[in-house]
Length: 323
Image (cartoon, rainbow, N blue to C red):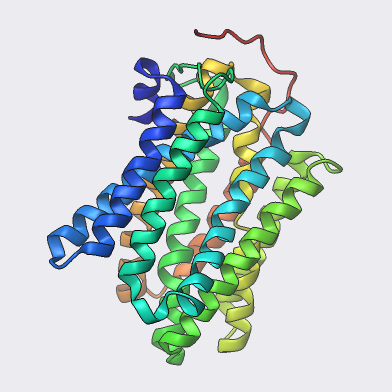
């Protein structure tokens, strides 16, 4: 859907709309007194982020040089986990006496202000004037496959790892929140590391190496029976939660500027499709089948390792700009 919206509106409008939706979502969540208002806030927040992610990535890719695209995109993506760390600190040390509502309302105001500020500063950039085209392309099949498999692995990881620690080892709420916060720190470090290493190692080689480590990590989840060791594996997997920077940045080498938003949107759609399917399948396996659900994660990591071989980093094609 985002790709199609990009065909009728400029990236600047989508970017601004994303910040407004996220701000309204935070405001509704912070002021919620009934479950349906809370649900509305969650939907607005999710919709805003769904627009922001491909739009911001597209803007960074359009404006960056091919050889700098991975570093630029890794820097952008690392800001997400950094923001979660900072907001957690804000909640705990500054706004705790005033409640969660004050934090969300404050964040909503900052979100809207930042949206208009960013829109004003990028108003005359080439990316702000860019429109997009949405097409499924045969030569991008490795990108589509990798996004779907990443979604499958993410669905297993996010759904079952913490559940397994809580269900099998009785990890309490405070410990769970601490683990999640440390995971965000590791993800921030991972994106920064990928941006740095991508300047010295071929991106495809780096990506395949990450998939090997992810494979071993899921094997560890199958074999290890210690809460401490499984927590360490959780943090390692969080560190490796950065492969999208490599797969998305490759579009700078294979897609025209007007196609980037549509291509990323197609990839994100397949990612979420995998992330929705796998919790249901994994839940059935966890309850009724003798197979360890984490073996599926290892299987998907191997498939990703094989598909990454076909990811193309070639000289960028000629671009066409819309004004």
